[in-house]
Picture 1 (cartoon, rainbow, N blue to C red):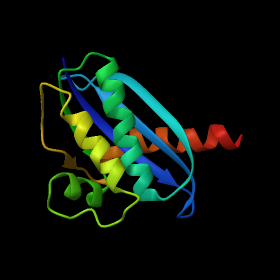
Picture 2: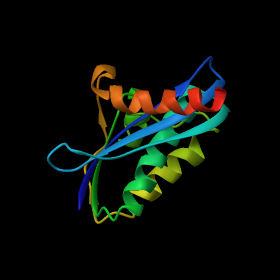
Picture 3: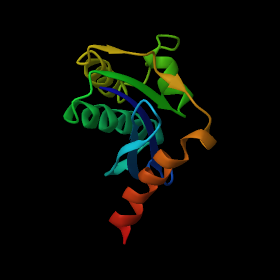
Length: 135
């Protein structure tokens, strides 16, 4: 099964209350699953990685064998592609976890940067996690 994952992290203030969201689509673009998770106090970059982790773990649980990760965090995507180094020590374990999860699939497409407007559903999930926690 091939799944496309749109992931997004949100942090109100930076650092601040944060959430992770992911939307998983089938090959025809139909929504298979939407997931979100409240993260507590963290930075936006940490939330972006946590969202990718949430999406990848969910895809594995759903039985995906191939994935494509899309995110609006240019920093995270360029780090995953090896174009930027991971300089912040707090991001390194998250980076390693994303790489490890990607390697659990039979294959994966290179992570892809998308515009914020194209990531609205994942953004909504990340913010829903914060809103539901704060309610």
